[in-house]
Image (cartoon, rainbow, N blue to C red):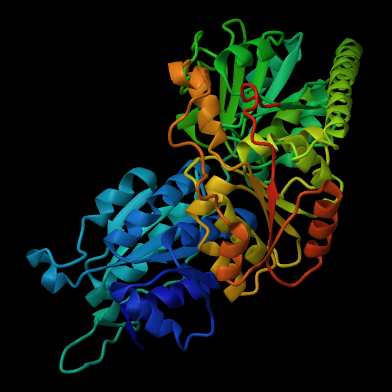
Length: 580
């Protein structure tokens, strides 16, 4: 059967179960869009700009756990998308990012829009390639999909010259003549992934168990890959078996839930800065590190080492690069996260002495009492903020905390407002539906929330966005309206880049210390999100009262259209940014 390069591309993806393609096209992408005009196997999700396009695909892939496919315009479109590609790279999101390239017959002339896209994309992808022959299209697609989905997962990039997209190849082993020439053979073997789960070495697991069993006061540092590798149940069982608190990664890399928010052993998150991290961890003698990058810090502080020197580390990861990368591990375990935790649990539980069980009960009681006290103190603080006007960040979060459905998905890109309040209150009742920023390129959250809702049409989706961050990807509202994606957007609006002000003060900058800032206030004029949302076809309301906000958001969860709430919050500068 004769196929064009782009038809071969689509046939392989359809056979692999891909049903959505996220894109913003240009001339070099028109062969794809032309083929999609009659191909009912796919839904094309159009975005008005590359930032929301990439973010929507990112959210879809993170929620579904499947490959997401993105088609961008040539060089300028890829350039516009690079911030969101960086986010996906830091998250390890399995994306197949494609862009059309100029006709090979024009390349030597350095034609309009032509550029070295492979080199541009390479630093923030697992693999980046330009396909030069139509017969290589199927091979490239299979290789790209396998690379994206094999741990450590991540984005890949394919540059597809427009003439390669349009060239005809032959899917059978007996090519036939087309327009007087023989089409190139196309190997259309379906995409089939190998089982990438790697069992850890038994000796390493035994060493890890011995160190944890001998520890006087162990703790667990856990991160996003717990959820992404479906290892939550194993981590919960292991924490309970050890009587160890589970402390989640700090806001600089905090992405998915690493532990149930309402579990008594949830020790909340690491602070942001090295001195506070050292203080937080100094009581422990052994740390089990699993599912996280240890550590990616944000601002340099002395002492620069956040892990106290006396602590011994046990580190589990699928990626050997992560183990001992920054801090030497006493025991490194290379293997599938879920399997490794399960086998470590077997070692911890067999055999168990009465003395060990007594130590576990004592540790558990001590940690649970501390965690319960912290949660109750936060609840009282939230209640004390109820009558503050304009709403304080805690007042806003407290109002929303009362109406979160058990199966809600929450996307946060409002760091100085949200501050992991939902987790610290224990109100997130599922462990899959939380998405926090990991790459920190702004404009991410709005598009991600749309992608999450496309992946989970039956789950309510709440996007909590800073007014500054939302402005980077606000064009995504049009896509939500165009495809009737009923996401609930809450703009936490303090008319400023408050995190920059807080970081300026943390850096001891002289004018920041006097609270004099340049380029950090979004005023004169202020952003009018009611007008912006309505201009893109999304219903919008300004809300000032906590009860009204709770009622409107609760009703919106049951609605069938996107809706945006602009919530003015206090503009006074918060104290030094904390986490946990």
